[in-house]
Amino acid sequence: MAEATHVVTLISDPARPCLGPAEIAGLRAVIDASDPRVLADGFAVDLPFSGTDPAAADARLREHSTLPVDIVVQPAAGRRKRLFLADMDSTMIGQECIDELADLVGLKAGVAAITERAMRGEIAFEPALRERVALLKGLPVEVVDELLRSHITLMPGGRALVATMRAHGAYACLVSGGFTAFTGPVAERLGFDENRGNVLLVEGDRFTGFVAEPILGREAKRETLVELRNRLGLSQADVLAVGDGANDLAMLGEAGLGVAFRAKPAVAAAAGARIEHGDLTALLYLQGFRREEFRD
Image 1 (tube, rainbow, N blue to C red):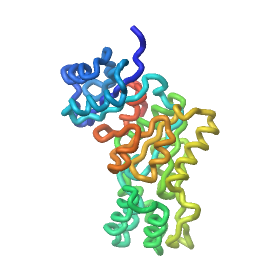
Image 2: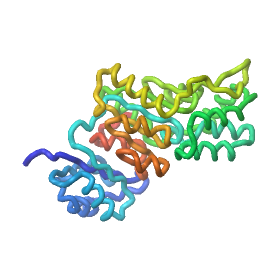
Image 3: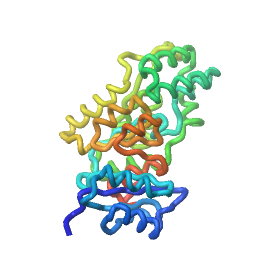
């Protein structure tokens, strides 16, 4: 039998496994897939297939399935990626750092509303960032360490994602429209090779209310991907990127596999793949890794 040309990966929420043999068999029949390859019992499975248009296969599965699972269709070849770029806020961590900083001066609600509009693509990222940073003027720099200790939480699966990819030869970069004061410590906790972000300007021991120019935004994220890809001698197909906001769209579009992770609607609609139910280890299943191959 010829090798399958495409594969659909089904991924459930780790807290709600729902991919038993009967469920897998039912979905397999929808696209006349080959024998399933279970990646994690109850949680994730690959269904290889040929002869069906990939977009049609995706549509059929979504129409047929009532299960709370992520469905991602992609070519069967070249799934393992060698360069990984990730957004930080609401992707690799559970918070928006600027909103947490604004909370310290009693302005979280207003700042969070601006953040939400920027992430949805309703307003331009760069002026929205300058507007929010201006509200932080006078905050002591030391509050960053306190927020990192008490408020900033890692997204489930993030450490395993980075560790597993690096163990298999991938290079990992945390690239954020947020701030280096946070990207540095977060990247270290998660095991990234490098990190990039915006610099909050400081005078003495307090923030000035300004951010260093040029701002790292939508195009800068894409340019970072291209720079690293060229530096490492890789092709577009070798790159995996993940993010949740409108300023991630150019980066996701430049990657061989661009994943919208629990993303804003416009971002999810535009990305090549979207994850709503799985945690960050879903990005390993998308590359064909089995659960027993994960590193911690």
